[in-house]
Image (cartoon, rainbow, N blue to C red; front, side):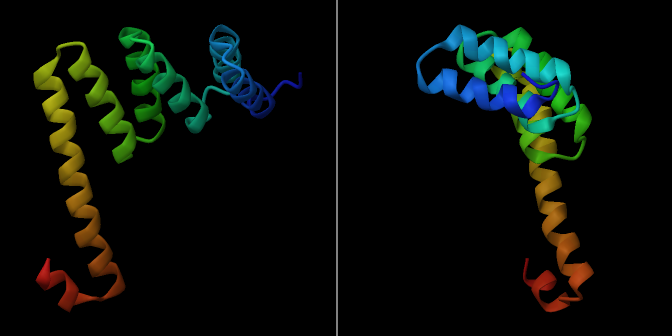
Length: 123
């Protein structure tokens, strides 16, 4: 295979469709190793690890995804969900809380940028 993540990610999806989970996980790990800054592949790997109850490894990849996109709400929720599964309730709560705050601020900021002050007042 070429030395990029895209073909390996597609191969992982073929393995997943065929029910070959170990090969899928290996292909996803290879893809992440080849392109560590590929956010979508790293998130997919974290999700697959979480689904297989490999929470510590999933947390590592979810935190790396959050590092790649520090203000990403979906990345913050993924980390909080894994922390909750690991029993880190307070840390998970902080993650969920900051995500709700981010999303509320994003909506308010959009209104100001667009000059839609009337919509901003109704929020």
